[in-house]
Image 1 (cartoon, helix red, strand yellow):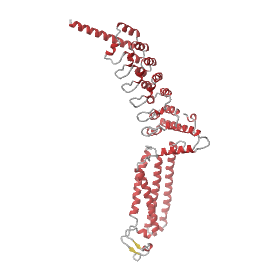
Image 2: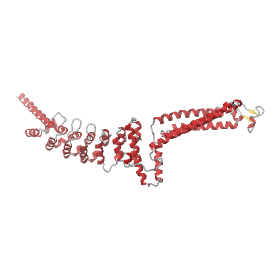
Image 3: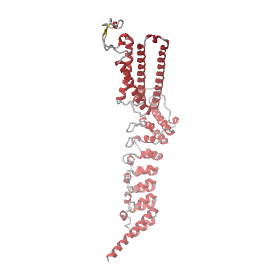
Image 4: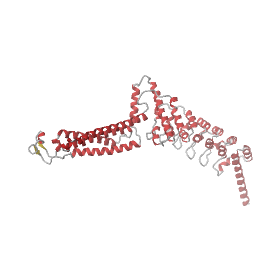
Amino acid sequence: MEMTRLDEEELVMSCNDNKLAQLYEAALSGSVPTLTSLIGNDPQILERVSLSPNPETPLHISALAGHVEFTKALLTRKPELASRLDSLKCSPLHLASAEGHAEIVKALLQVDKNVCLVADAEGRIPLHLAAMRGNVDVIQQLVKAQPWSIHEKVNGNHTVLHLCVQYNQLEALRILVTLVKGKRLFDFKDHKGNTILHLAVMLRQPETVRYLVSILETKEEVNSLNSIRMSALDMLDYAARDFKSLEIREILLRAALHVGGEQEQEEGAGGCTVGYIGKKIKEGLGYLFKHQDDDWVKSMQKTLMVVAALTATMSFQVVTNPPGGVWQQDYNNTEIPGVCNKTSDGICHAGKAVLGYKEPSDYLLLMYFATLSFVFSLGVVLLGVSGIPLKNKFFTWLFILAMLASISFTILTFVDALVMLVPRPPVDKPGFNTLSRFIDAWIGVLGVVLIFATIRLLLWFKKYIPGWFGCNKSPNRRSIGI
């Protein structure tokens, strides 16, 4: 008798399993008649789906396969299935949104709109999946059902706008931009503070960048900074140097010019106003103190620090250990006639520079040159170790200027010491007089280096501060191709 009951239970379980298998096969094929027949023979079959070891419900399968009528039939008989999650925490709405089944999405939303804000195992809501696939119709339905879903982030990181850029879905991005009503587009940032313009530049998407800059309203949006104080244009310095990077750089620079031109026209076409000039000065100061992690800047400033320390040491040695030495004891005018009588007390004091008594004018000039070289060199060293954000080309130009002055005074110190120390007959010879020609040549070299450094500075200004050199109207969008 007991064996008979076990057999009956096994038979019932086997029968139920067969019915569930037929239900799942019907969901896969989208057969509504089969579903109707199964429910007619077993009204509790949909309730037993929860007892199935399969984490996916028939609604998951029909939503993924795109069977609209079968999905509607299931929702009519058991609407609770719309909120069920599979093993990856995906609802049927997740699957339909990813596949772009707009009619099924509409039917699911009519049953439960709150599923729009449910995240799967990877932190993605249905809107994120639709954006990744570029399903425009689905995006519109999801945002209309739950407008707040636009603000949801994937695990607190990327917004749906970032996903559109990441997966290069420009049309989906256009639709979402129109749906972001009354909100600043560039307030949408990831956990690192990157706007979608930052991301488009990093991924080198010229078309996306061109679209984004075409809808900007202020220049501040073009120059928006992320958490490490970098604008979208700054990020190009870390990208590969190819045609895409050059194209994107041109787009960003022209965008900055365009926005600046609109503001300038509001101030009048008669010329630069005081407010315009003040704004440019403010922008210029901001760029001067802005860190630019450029390899040339870093290597040049390291080199200048080494040279500054070397010239400072040389100048210090000239002052503390003067050429010609110092008197070893006190001498009077009787002992060394013609030298000590140049002092007020007629005594050459021990420890004082010999040349300071013999040729006081030339020695004083020597000390002037050594002191100026020492001051300029220590100025460069002091600024380099101060911690002030000086790593850009403007301050590098100032460093170069200071070092040119320091090296020049070091050369003059050498020449003055040479003239004082070399005996007069060699100095009087014509060949020794060519020293002045070398000094002239050195001045010419200094001029060339200074001009070269100044040209680099001006090019940097033109590149990073568009419109700084004039108040001319900037070109319109059509003329610049935006």
